[in-house]
Length: 271
Image (cartoon, rainbow, N blue to C red):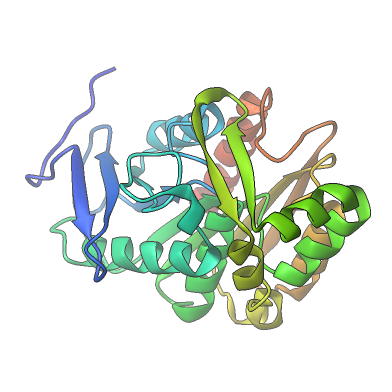
């Protein structure tokens, strides 16, 4: 299937941030690519990258449903951004999403609204911006969202206390991506300290966009209890889906994700 590119949008651009670091943005759209074509911003989570299999399945579901996909790798992580994983945190994910939103708003295809779809820490950033810009967000898809650092810490204390203590004492955690061991780095304990500044569920009632939440019932970073607590805070139309046996990175659940997303998008079209 051929990707159609119009409006003089390059397939890949690097945006320079205020700190002179880069994040990588890729734009893809199947015809028709017009100003009426809706746009979704898609990104990954901590120690992730936008070309992970489950995010590629999500992107394809959007494309086949007639959406323009603006996908991007954060400054710090395992993707095409130029910064080290060790500097990744929720605040930086929020800053990166703000940079991409600003860039999108300056493009010829921008029609005043956009959707947000993201995983983990990226989903936390998406929730933050849906709270900040409730009328601009067309819909919100949160995949295993991380939105409250204290809840994250409590889960790790319950399920992996020795691992958590070792991480805190050393100040850094060695991490290889579960599907690509060549992508290796360190997660700083500062990430946890930064996450504990956020309790995004307290303002979730502000979100107006129809919302889809998906998580795995074996995920200790975005547990069922965390997702249920966030779900109860929404006043917008919201659907929550749990995948049995699924962990944080949705390995083996790519097609189920795509099916849930297509159903959600079809329901939005009908409504």
